[in-house]
Image 1 (tube, rainbow, N blue to C red):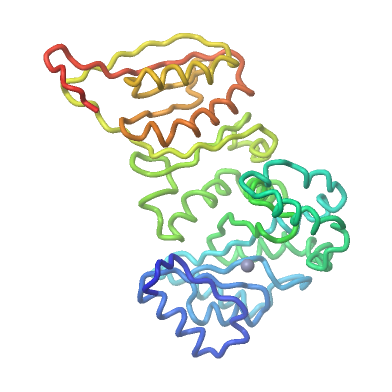
Image 2: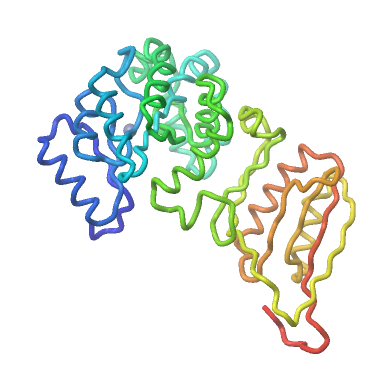
Length: 350
Ligand SMILES: [Zn+2]
């Protein structure tokens, strides 16, 4: 606990004594750290709930069709205790739902996205391990587990848990580069969760669960955010996130006001989508641009705040996001806000 631990994860807690399980949870909670627990076997779930863990992981129970009544009763008892806050549960369903697709369409495993940043020998090793997706022992039971997932998911929902978007990336054929949007897609299109509920389960609620809500989770000044540009409204179709050429940009959102001695000038002009990236590069290099708003048909598509001092860290992701946008826009209007020092105060404000 004295090390830089953010969260403790229990696994196989049904093979520990109950005293050991309680000790882990109590010590972690004393230090203000959340505890998550594997929820595969019934006794793992019972012990995790009895010890008061904060979040359970995976849908679990292998091919069993549903959670037994005593476990549902324990969950309901826990979720009825408002003072304890939400009971989190991360079902990680997509790895199981998508197995058969990847088994039957292994060319999807050549997607360059998952190889980004990995050394060649590791990429080769991973790819070799997936030569026969139909023979992977990990997935022996998956075709029989798959039909049980929707019912288990709904049992959890009805018992009052707060479900979180999370993935089991790292299991065979399941890469970080696609697993999050596939989980969102599974919730909306397989389990019929309202899209905005799914988005909140991927943003706001995990930030609260990880005690990181002062840093992330909502789009407000002062927090970090991954800006994801989609070609369709995410409130109507989460699938759009998967099919669009997509870029994420990490911003520290800032609405810092200009000093009183500065004047803000605004200008706007039209550019063709294929000129968007070049135009943004030029604007950023001009140095006094504080905000760039990209609009199409009068509606704001994206806004890039360029607070002094953060330009270096947001520049590359901003251009990546703009590149993705250019693929889905035709012509757009760029609005630029610049800071111009007043004649009465010629000091550099940066
Ligand atoms: Zn796990």
